[in-house]
Amino acid sequence: MSEQVISGDQARLERAYRRILTWYPRSFRRDNEDEILAVLLDTAAEGQVRVGLAEAWDLVRGGLRMRLWPAVPRPRTVRAAVKLMLAGAAAELATVITVLVTSGAVRAAVAARHPSVVHAVMAHEVIDLVAAPVAIGVWLWLAWANGKGEDWGRVLGAACFGLLSLTMLGDLTQHAATYAPASMIAAAIEWAIGLASVLLIFTPAAGRYYRPQLVQQ
Amino acid sequence: MQEATFLILTALADGSQHGYGIITEVQQISGGRVKLRAGTLYTALDRLRADGLIGVDREEIVEGRLRRYYRLTPAGTKVLADEAARLHANATAALRRLNPGLAGGVA
Image (cartoon, rainbow over all chains, first blue to last red; front, side, top):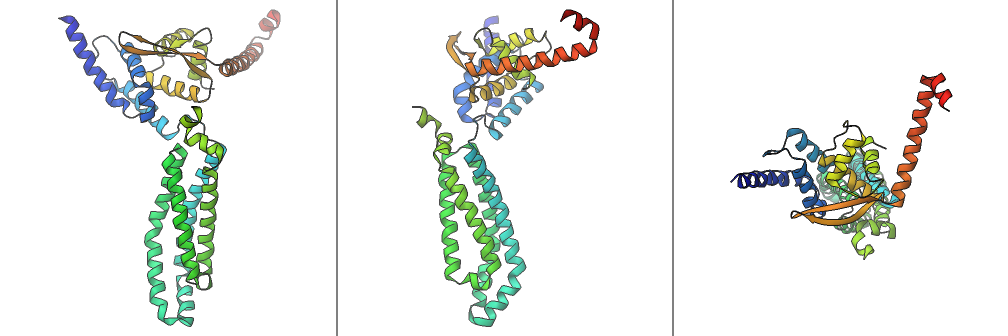
């Protein structure tokens, strides 16, 4: 009888611990959940059915730390790429500020030579401004995913760089360099940052970080 | 090196231990002062494994539960030895300055 009560309590405590362990990265749980659970149950007081506050906080803090600062050391190339991606977000911000500041001058330059396309240029500006927060978000997202060594982050990074390149080419064919030189320079800096970060995440050293299990086998 | 990390490595210095064993060893080594919680322990073990200072020695199933034993790697042994020597040198210097006569006599 008492045996049954104890196992019932333990099952409840085990469920409570498992819930808290969802704070940990999935890869860690797959390898370590049963092991850490055994330790937790070993250290639990007799008849304990709830997780103590200090204990819960200790577990949550560990989970957050593992998610935010993964233990696998990042190779220098990936660390540099992450910094560049953060710089990319800053460059996008600089680009959009440049577009705003030079907007009047650009419109005047277009109006003087090709008055018929002024509206098209203004529409282009509006698109730039709307797209900017999205682009900044994507840069930050890429920095986060690549810092964690997500392989899809690498692929997404390359795809975004392709898109950025196409946008640049599009702007060049519309003679943006003539009418909006400042915006074009800012965009070119952003493009160069994109190129450098994509090259860095596809180096062999970075590859071992993104796909450790493939290299080990 | 953080004290918890130092104590975990010390707990493994004379043989492999499983998670619960490390907790009790650390408590004993620190004279009951440091009581590691599971979250702290496993965050530290995860990092030490990634850094190549410890490795998995073996796994056992005890009462239906997984028990994984950890051991120091040669790199871990060296890091612990270096850190112990550093702490020892610092402690010796501190004691010598605090008690010039005493430490001088012993040396």
